[in-house]
Image 1 (cartoon, rainbow, N blue to C red):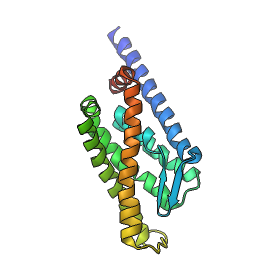
Image 2 (cartoon, rainbow, N blue to C red):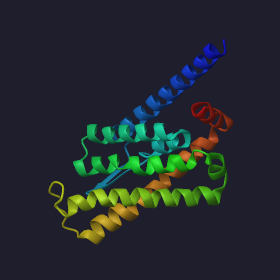
Image 3 (cartoon, helix red, strand yellow):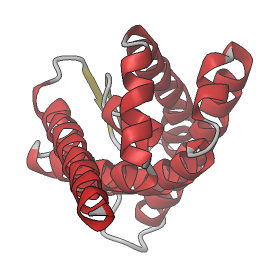
Image 4 (cartoon, rainbow, N blue to C red):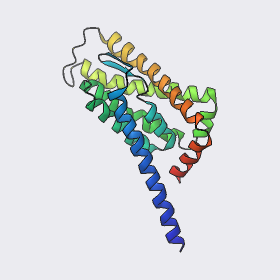
Length: 196
């Protein structure tokens, strides 16, 4: 009898995890395609709220964060963005996994404190930017493809991609955090069910 109850509870948790992963992935795929606010200055691109589903996934679990990040990269590919931007989106797996692992046991503590949440957001933004700068650098120096960037490394890679990514990441984190908090205890209960 105990085995049947445990199996049913496990099945509900797996269904919930799969459903949340699918919904957030679908949103992550659609945002690059339909979001009207996009700035494209190659090799940089800034699509408002493109990281919000990834941050939501990070608040839930590492597995969901990785899957949604992969879905986001597919969204940028399907939206017809240049390959350098699609690979930058693929690099989101790095910050999403590390951030989700960190938040796994500290989510409420970090999200409840304005100081801790902004510190976390900035740290994740730096990690996010480092991964994207690494990808763009491969193109800039001709190690992958033929990145024809006339502006120079400092401007094209460091300022546009590096600094721009930190700011963009922090803005999207703030949007995700405000949305998460606006849903109140429902999201905390949902996150606990996914974790169980």
